[in-house]
Image (spheres, rainbow, N blue to C red):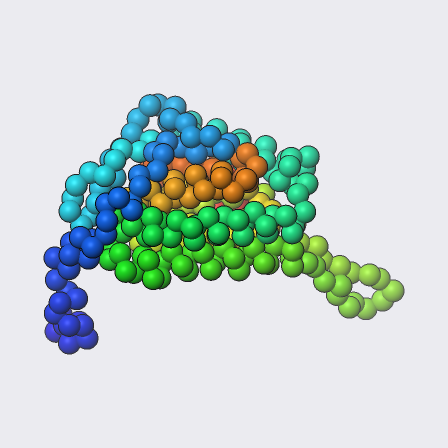
Length: 259
């Protein structure tokens, strides 16, 4: 519209700009991660053996094929997350401060690979590399560090009431969280989901957008490298009408988060 054209210079409205921006990204920086499902700290193929292609939206070229999760995979992942949330599991018995240390370690690993993550984000999402490098990835790192510091500061309160009674609140982790993210800020949305979930001691099955699965899979590699216990974070790549629907309907999921 004319109003939109008046607000933004013409060069910002031209499609070739995305291609030019992507041309500044070195292909060697965008290392393609493991393209299988991440369940119970292992990368495994989909039960069906199916895969689907993820494309570079700036060029339309296929980047790689990733595993296509469906109901069977969702069930396996939820059971892994449920086992990790068991009262006697290493994750549930871990001190809150140690949970924070693991989140800090994950953020540090992201910072060590910041150029690679930014290049991969731009390759799979199509946004300019400078946006991924200067905004998306640094903000994701900052988000995780914020929640790392918050992990040992989750507390209840003593509430004054009438009568000779003691009233207290205690904050407990919800349980298994199914978290479904969109395509527009792939890595940042993953950080927004993982940060509070990890800090509070929950476990998760993360179903990432089928259009942009690659940075979440790279994050899964870093999560394992950081030393998180088995089953705490599980990552599914697949479609909303199959994997996403199965997670939203699963009776062993305690909370569902969208966007």
